[in-house]
Length: 108
Image (cartoon, rainbow, N blue to C red; front, side):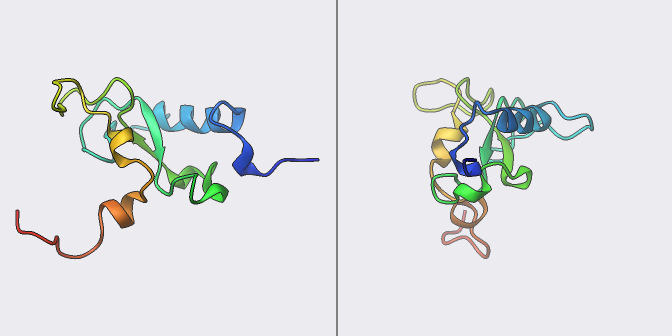
């Protein structure tokens, strides 16, 4: 009996291969965080979170580079450490709930 793709964790060989392909590409993809835009990414994040969209867990187009546990070398949180962009995004859909289309609600 085979398990659905959503039941495979981040240590499953399919996900490990996807993570390696995104973090160490053969082509010259930019090493930019999808959240803050700075270089030095060390992990990946799902555009559509697995907790809400389990069928997209191992879809390459759903994965983006992001800063993880070590944090962004440029952005600092209020403790002075590098900001963990992956934690800040949380369980939100990156391009719909975090960056909604249209004009921002307030003028910067």
